Amino acid sequence: MTITIDARALLIESIQEGLAQGTLEIGEAVRRLRVEVTGLVRTLVHIEHGEGNQTLKSLNAVFRPFGLKMGVVRIRRDIS
Image (cartoon, rainbow, N blue to C red; front, side):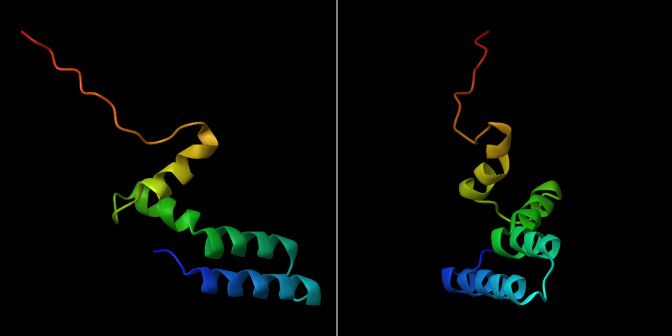
């Protein structure tokens, strides 16, 4: 599940305001950005449990930090 650009902007703005007003600690701000804005944790959980219908974009976002990406490869067929 992804959020709209507008909802994402509002979340980021609320996190910025919390930091500026001192009502939000830096660690909590980072956690909220990671979990609520990027959705990466949610995506990882779904992939690990074989749930949902992951997009190529979300899978590549998960694999990118490891220097990997999804792709199409030719299947080798043994000819007997």
